[in-house]
Image (cartoon, rainbow over all chains, first blue to last red):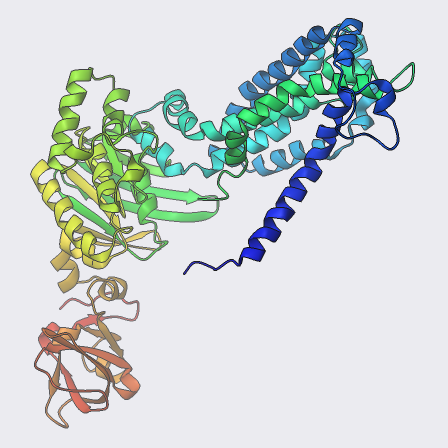
Length: 276
Length: 334
């Protein structure tokens, strides 16, 4: 029998859900609104919500003062590159850990994850020096490498959990049917794991796009992605809220659009295996 | 051809011995069932033959050739899994054709063989469906179709019917047996269900704790079990075991009497007891008799036996059909 839900309950939970949603969305909304204000209005108290003079001046200033497309291109290369390389390493790694585990596999997985528990700033100086000695400072290659390495544990872990969900029998059936390991990977495992692989890579892309600690510390101009572009508006001549907001809006727009279109995939992937 | 021979096959996982010295000769075209309680190693033995597990020592010969170092696909066997293990992203056609595709067979030939297999298994109208759109029985048929289309030397079945409901299981049991006879291909079938074993097998292998206890035809196992384990495992309801004085009268440590060989006799003539439960099945009546120090005895009688719980009875075994076992539980042959 279906549970009966009273109308008041529906109203209350709907209102609560919208309230939560708006609360989470509010900073983004406020940022977008501020980007269309003049600098004066942007920090006016009390703040004006919708009734102010709308202007696109900030966007024009930002684009002329610092080259948005240069930074956007760096973001695409760094986030995309680190994701692709991470996938190439993580798919076989997760496959072998899931289907050909040794006695130490669990320890290795845990050790990999433990690296994420260490505060990044703890290794900033050694990493900085290594980058300096290898001439990797402010290079795309350097940033791709560090972001890829930083996210690999998460990517391997996620793929490992997805692969674990695939029944062993099916892979054994493929083996009985005469499939070699490569063919088993191409024809059986990958098609079955596509939702998991796709959402893992999507998540990695978002994490890499938004990563600020390493990109801010290891790049200045040549390889600087959008995070550096945003940060440049919070310094030397003081805070410019409106311009900072405009820069931030421009920086998050691409990934927001991507996230919006792939939200179904993302949610499906993140809850994969939880609901059967 | 599909003759399979196991010579001193051992398998251990670390310190755990799963299979202890298995020796078997499986003739070409025969239907052999591995039966035993769960954890007895029957599935492991099947997987060793399939090549999905490596033997620790010993030899497995298929048509005289040692295959212990040959990968599963090259052994020329096909397997039906308990979970069916269909490829969920492929259609029924794709599932059945996969093995042939991997073997690099030309497309028209694949199509012809898939159609033929589908026709044999009544799957023709489902060829373009995905496994999730099929019922349990149909999925099972697809799994069998995938196995027969490759024309293997032998079929390996790993408890293939255990996920089906009782009625379908009986039907599929007959279909599998019929198909095997029609194709005249060797089949090895693993089950924990001794009824399945008795009805399907040409020969049965009874396994217990990684050891082959007995290998023979169903009736050999039923009529001449080599030890207490086989005697107790084969037959439903189970054989009655009596030890103590009644056994020593027959020169044995334990005597075994099948429920149908225990008769209800006139008052005062045999072992006294009281019926605790009487099950009237129409054709048969099962009496569970509490016979004091002899324990609970099962009697299989005709449907017309009108005894009920609480009735006092006297039981007598058919002396010609007694099974005698020594202290070690090994059968004593006259």
